Length: 239
Ligand SMILES: [Zn+2]
Image 1: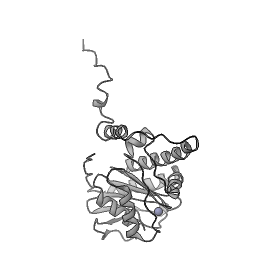
Image 2: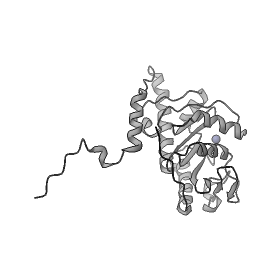
Image 3: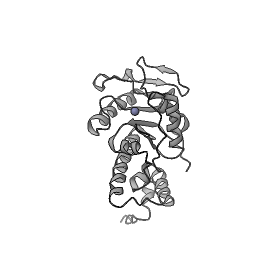
Image 4: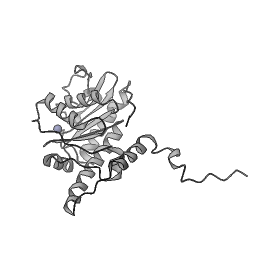
């Protein structure tokens, strides 16, 4: 399924604030980040805008965010970017259809990552927003940045918006940061449903041709009036 490339942000002023707000959302409202253990990136004109490593969110200012070029040079910010920069960089370079990524160690997705079990397409919201099976990478110890990033990129492939990182966590994305947050939530929910469904007799995944239809619908029709043209009656003629 050909998805158009995402245009990078030119002006990052409001975006920087949004990234900080999203850090709080992931930590305090969703509970997917513990302390500063989690990170995110957004595609910008100069490369990727990234959260810095080990700065408490209460202390984080818009200027603390870093920009790293797609070929791996830090071009803005005096802080050190997240230790998982290479994973973000390799994915955004390989996947022009993604504009933002969030990496977390959320519990249910991490459970599947520790069992090294891919999450099949099992529920409609996942089919629409995640756009495919959430595969699991092979295990690479944290700290081997390039090798880990390559393993994660390979498992992600060129369609799904999320992938499990073996014995570590998950990385999920979208065209925008808002969409990446929703993708994280649907992956976490799907992981939980997967584990629970396996306990009551086993998952019955959605057949591929049907989840692909749902994915196409979400990407190209969802939220548009045209989507309801077979449902909504024409308005009565004005008298
Ligand atoms: Zn991590």
